[in-house]
Image (cartoon, rainbow, N blue to C red; front, side, top):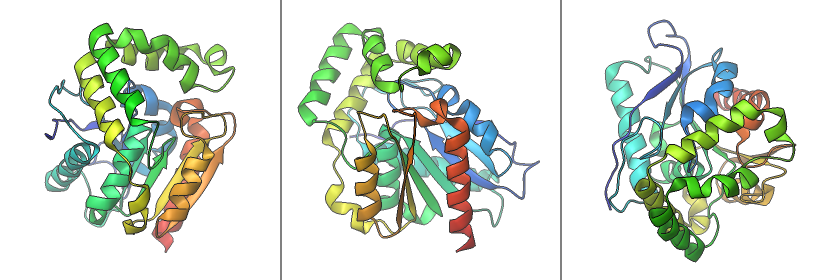
Length: 272
């Protein structure tokens, strides 16, 4: 296994002008880019946080990575990024640091809680679970995409990602996400599928002491609300919230609701 290279992508704030704000690191799911997924939500969060994102290997601004990797490797890459932001002074002294990840990045969020919980004051696991899907299905998808390319996943992803009616109401948001999928590196995508196949921390949730917020969409068939309830019940300090009219891409489908819940929860965590 190997740790991929990732790059910090500022979605709101510039550090020097926001010394009084806490910092929220965000990540996107398989086939999506952090700017496309989190753009509107970052605007809603900007009054409270500096929002810093990162793209999965071979997606958006992150270079391709065709070596076998794991969710733990991705979490290590995020931890290195966070520590680098401390050294660079992007994270002001005394600022609280939070993390929010969608889908596979929700798994990264849980792994951060297991391996690097000291870096974060709170973690949000969005449209995700302690285990997603079945290992054989992920391995079959990895093999298929490696041969056929990521454009082969566009039609099926459009059906799974969004609640009924969203594509018609928000064609621009939909197109941005699906374009990122179409442009994603097939080999990097396949390696992440393999990482998903190997990930299952259901029996380790009790080891996570960082406060956890689980947000799931009522219409999500990939990670239904029961996935978030399982996480919230399993960790030391967990809360589960369900967003109506949302499927698998909450920050894009309901940026206002996603931001409102994140701010309210992390404000409560900050207040103790």
